Image (cartoon, rainbow, N blue to C red; front, side):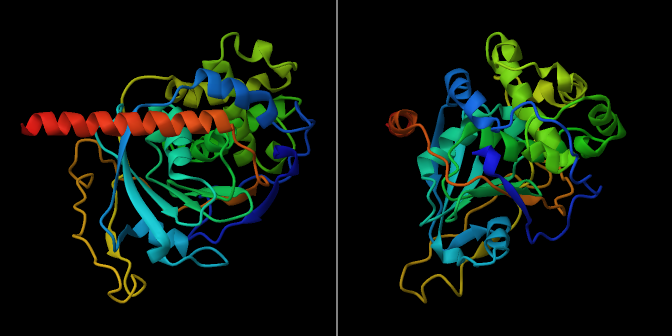
Amino acid sequence: MFSSIMKAAVAATALFGSPALADLGRPTLFSDGLSSHVNKEFLQYMPSTPSINSSWPWGWIPKRCADEAKRHKVQFNSSDFEVFNVQYEDCEEAWIFCRHTKAQLSQSQLIDYFGRLPVHERQSVSHVMAVPGRGSAYEAGGVVVFQGKTASLSIFQHEVGHAVDAYNNPDGSSSSTQEYLDAIDGDTCVPDDYANSSNVEAYTQVGVLLMYNTVVPGGLDNIGADYTCLSKQLAVVAARQQAAMQLGGTCSWRHPYGKVVSMDPESGNNKRAVGPKPVMNLVAGHPLAVEKDINRGGEVTYYGNVSSDEAEDALAVEKQASWNAKARHRAVRRNI
């Protein structure tokens, strides 16, 4: 639950370019966090995006994933990751996922929860990762990393929201603008205890509430609390991010994929055949590729282990199997 969230610095190459204001010390809209107030409605009104997925040849991994695997206190071997592409129907280029084989999040959960977010938020993310852990997550330079049992749309929205904060607007991080800092000063509350930790976290938690207001019929008027105490923050986040929260549409830009590296010397010392090196097509010069500053990191958010909706998870498995089967059938038909 968000009420038990603690913060810890992640060993990233660089921190946010603008320092975060720590310990805002404001009253909160919800003392028990946001997840219990939004997740049911998110699952209801943010549908799964149809997709197909395909595994990478063994022995290769994106350098961004390999680098993040080494940032953890307990480092992970690159050879313990399964790498796969996910092609959502709303973008011509796939996202690359890197999942540790012992991660608590399943492949289908990663595909489903990430794919429920609007495409104009997803496009701020370069890679999606899952590793074993005790319920935490972070975003660094466009890579979102989920550790442990974190199958929650509010968690995915929050972490992807950090990338949107950093990359959605040409003038840089929205949470560090004077406009947003003034909004915090002008309001009388922040969303929850977690939002009190800094302006960066307040911005992304306000983003969770704004997503609710955007996709749920009746919006925040139905959330069961007087949200006018943070109306100025909502207005700033809406001006800078709400267009990206609209469901539908297609991607308008993407981070380049970056380099592909060998899992060697971890790839089993020839115990398993190494496949052909994947060819990256989302590179400089591609119409969608936009170079952004990825030399920035965030902080690990500790959520504790989160219980997912088992019925929705099972339905996601069925949907993804059906979409993949239809894609294979179309491929066969084209070759007849």
